[in-house]
Length: 278
Ligand code: FAD
Image (cartoon, rainbow, N blue to C red):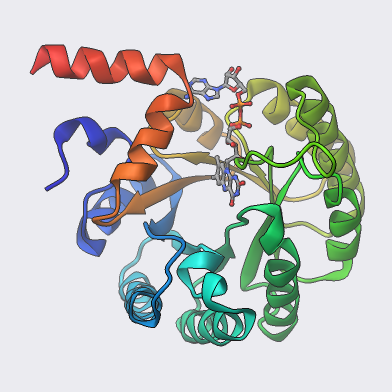
C-alpha cells in the first residue's frame, strides 16, 4: 500500500484512485495527465501488461466525464527491447486511445531515445491529427532543430528543461543557459506553431515568459505541472489558462517518489515533517 507520505506525489496504486484524483482536480478546473508508473522494462510481459493497462485506462477515461489524457514512457512500451517493439506497442496504445477520443502524450527519456521517440510521434501525430503529443528537452543542443522539425507536425509539444543527466558534448549543463534556451525555444514555438504549446515547468519565470509570448502571438497554450508541486500556483493559473496536472499512479511508485523528494530540499523537509507528525 502507498504510505500516506507518498500521497502528495502519487495518486495511489490503481487506475481508480488516479481517476478519483483527476475528478477532484477537475473540480478545480485542472485537467489530468495520467501516467502508469513504469520504465526500462527488459521483458515482453511487462511491456504487454502496461500497454493493456493504458488501453483500459483510455476506455475508463472515455466512459467517464473526466477532463483527462494519458502519458506513456517509451521504455515502458518496449524501447529498451528494440525500436520495432516500441513502434508496435505505442501504435497499439495510441490507436486504442484515439478510438476513444483520448489524447496520448509520449514522454521523452534520455538522449539515446530521442530519434526513436520523435519518429514514432511524427508518424502517429500525422495519422491521428491532433491526438498525440511529445515532450522536448531544452537541455539538449539538438532540440532547437527538433522544434523546427515539429512546427509542421499536428499535435502538441510539451517543453521541459530536461530531467536526465546528459553528457556535456551534446547538452547544456548550466542552469542559467538551460533557462535561456528554454525561453528561446518557447519564443520560437509561440511564434511559429499553430497552437499546442505545452509549458511543462514549475518555474515562475518560464511561465511568465510563456504568458508574455501568448499575449504577443496569440498562440494557444497550456501549462503542465506535476502532482504535489506548486499546487497553489496550479489553482491560481487555472483561473486564467488551461492547466494540466501530471498524475502518476501504480505500484512502481518508489523510485518516482524518491526522485521528487531528492530534487528539492523543500520536498525533503516536507517528508521529514510528515514523518515527525505521524
Ligand atoms: P526547476 O528548474 O527545477 O526550478 C525552477 C524554479 O521553479 C525554482 O527556482 C522554483 O521557483 C520553482 N520550483 C520548481 N520546483 C518547485 C517545487 N517543488 N516547489 C516550489 N517551487 C518549485 N522531463 C523529461 O526529461 N522528460 C519528460 O517527459 C518530462 N515530462 C514532464 C512533464 C511535466 C508535466 C513536468 C512538469 C515536467 C516534466 N519533466 C520531464 C521534468 C522537467 O524536465 C524538469 O526536470 C522539471 O520540471 C524541473 O524543472 P522546472 O522547469 O519545473 O523548474
